[in-house]
Image 1 (cartoon, helix red, strand yellow):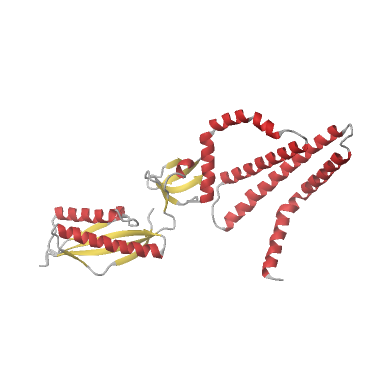
Image 2: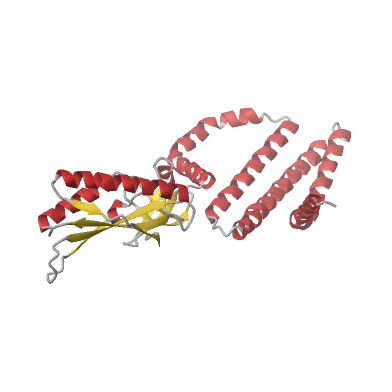
Length: 328
């Protein structure tokens, strides 16, 4: 027996044990009553007691089918998906499970109602149309809520982030995702520790920056000036370096640090050295290498601008790159 066939048999046995076996009695009852309903409909359709027997029996079968759907939905969402999330070491939101289970059960009820109506010559379409005006009024009143619920489903399917991820939003919100609910997502902000509640429909319309699993390389560059640098020139140098890296994607210019090393008063050498520390963010080796090349371009830009201001210096050939965990 091949490994694939053996694996398929194992899956089938597991499904039987987890799904069929716990619901064996209910399945047999539904099947038996369904057969009885078909026989009554075929053999006793012209009898006087047909209506008194068949309609209650059909309602009983429909109710048992809905109960079976409810049990299977609970089994799938609360056991299967939960176990899959645990095995994959991922968190799953309980509210999404509840929404999925309720949606499945409601869908089952609608299907059973349609089948019952069709088999008993009930105009389901006309009934739905008569309720259409009221349904439209309710839908209009709950438009915002429905939009947020649909947005939560989109977030769950697209998964731009999950619980415990660190994300940043265009309005400056930055922190750790604590929960993704049906209407909103809760973010614990970094630093202040406050809880920000963001509507899900807003999250589907903005750019989300996910910092989880990001890498950071600390790149240290040394600049050598052949004279003492005054305080006003140091401020100019800082400004030039920051402006030269601010627009480069992947370089965290907010963390750029410039430290000037004072010349030794005892020594006759009056040169000043500056240690410039850049932080490069990325998620893979290719992007990191590309951003290192961008940093080289930024260094050339710094050199050109400083020379325009008449500040002579050299960039030491040796650059130090240190892998560092991202600070969030």
